[in-house]
Length: 482
Ligand code: ACM
Image (tube, rainbow, N blue to C red; front, top):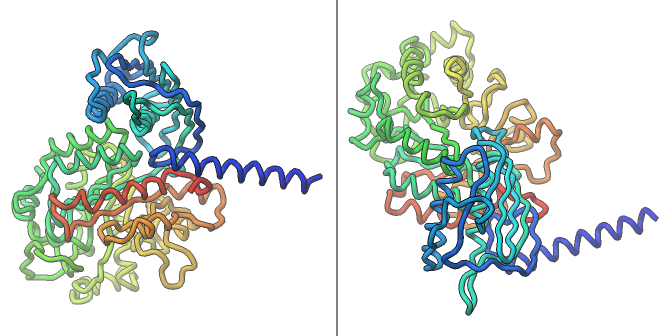
């Protein structure tokens, strides 16, 4: 009997997957939703399309998204939509409802359901951001035949596999203007990515205005930086799209720009620092053995962190080879005094100090996987980029999750490397690794990384898209559907 039931279950499941494959050929949805069924009752798009919103937050995210939706729909179809929005609930043809306004954290709900029928579209969500995700799906259901444009008649229930689905843009190597960031945020929202990781400082430039340390932008940006007002504008723009913004201030390595402005914080005495014009790994490194470094970082972070409402704050921490530390006798003495046996231990000392500073400012320290050392507190978040390290059986992401750290994966999603979409799509953050429920929860998700050594603002979009759409599906969709 058990065998018969098992065969039946496998049969039904097989049938289900087969029907999903057929649907995938028919509908151009990306990411593919968790559940979809068709009803053959398409909704005709004409000038009478109207939207109503029932929810707590009439004026903000969903209202903004509805206006954009109608504009995009008109652009796609050429249909001149008359009134559109806002309209009374009972009269509208597209009805959106949600219960609460999302506060954009890793706990935020993005679930939505979408039902398209002959004369009505219903989008229901727990949060306004869920409703936004539904609107994006609806736009992907636009199709046409000899009678005109329509939304495909389907019912969808959808929710993401990972809470952290990011794109990192490096605005330090080549500065990226506001318009580039905004159009990429729009594109991110269209494929349901929800984290914009903004790499703001590196050897080649410091890209944020500081009023406390103005030499940072005066001496280390070539005049190419974001004012604090522009930072706020991007954060607001992203929030309207349901996207969190995580800033990265890369320290103690990748800090030539900081040291160009404030050389007294460097590890090499008498060095003549100048911002880098080329790509590579460079030696200038903040001096972790002097209090002035921590005072500087505390003052800078105290000034900067209020611009970024998100709890997570990325401090980089990657690719510090410690050459200037090795060459500096005082730093060597400091290591001995504090019983720090290696440069890794010294960097951990530095990270722990930063972790405390950031904690006071209400922030959680996140860093590239070099920060994963034995004495790092588990409140830190590991951004895995080097994959499997020597001596580890699994990626640093899995290792971190097993050791109690939250983590995000970027190994395999380096879109600057111009690898095939098949390559990126075949990388899964978890794969077949068996995790406990708690370990699985600590794997927040993943990020595509767009390093900008070899792109300018004119070419960056062509490197990010369309491959990142496939990566976004990898982050959204359950393995079973892929
Ligand atoms: C990195 O690619 N250096 C994080």
